[in-house]
Image 1 (cartoon, rainbow, N blue to C red):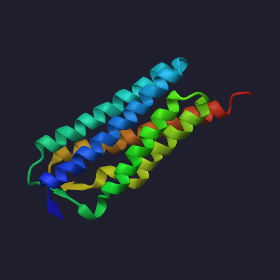
Image 2: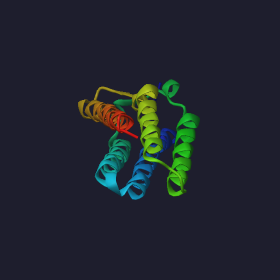
Image 3: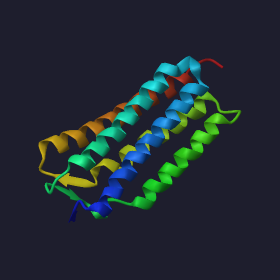
Image 4: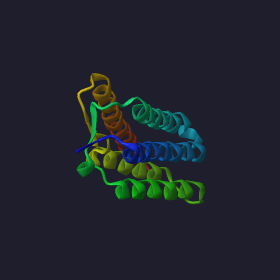
Amino acid sequence: MTLISTRNADAIELLALNEDTIGRLYEAYAERFPEAIEFWQGLARQEQAHAALIRRFGRETDASAVFKAERFRSAAIRLSTRHTEGEIAAARAPGLKTINALSIANAIEQSLIESRFFEVFETDSAELKTLFQKLMEDSRDHARVVLARLNAYRSLPR
């Protein structure tokens, strides 16, 4: 483990950029599905808030935060971000259905939880621990909300 450095500040920005990109995807879904605009915009705002929190962490962190290099795979985060950018393009193309958007959002949120993206730092700071906990709880909430909406949509008569 190493202390956060300029090199590791790039890791923080990658995490924030990933959250920004997910937020942009949800904004694209809000535009695509105006009947669910509040749902998608709510998720988008929360993702944008996550990006801001991560960047704040990067500005406010001190020597009490330790970067766990063995937990961080920049290539995986870049791949995730590129994939989400591809989904943004797909959201603007003809043919995307609500079920597809909900399934994609569900996969993204589940992936964030399973990959434990927010566990790449270790700290004794109560404030930073609270921040990381909030990010994980929000991701779990997103996953629950998206999955519930997906399941409700699946149960609609066709």
